[in-house]
Length: 91
Image (tube, rainbow, N blue to C red; front, side):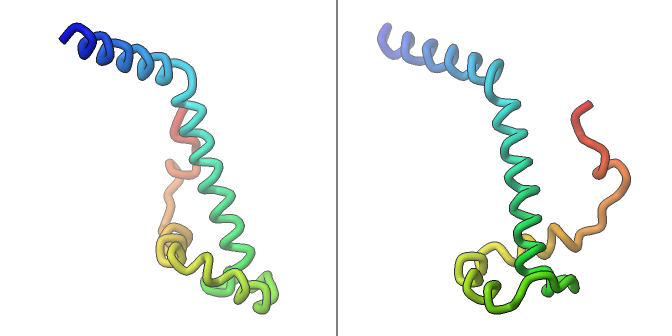
């Protein structure tokens, strides 16, 4: 009972420390990863949204790795964005 309670307190302390130090960095890194992924997809498969930039031979070689995420990417790229989304969410 006491060991279980100590484990629970230790876990809570770890989570609080993680939230104070690394959580915001992790969110920024995930956001940057998403932006870079969108840029890569736009360069390689831009012809799907009307922007041909990359030779199709190389795009076809990469296609089997990209197929699971194409629909989500197209939805994100073609989604209408307003002015508030272009400005950073965190001030």
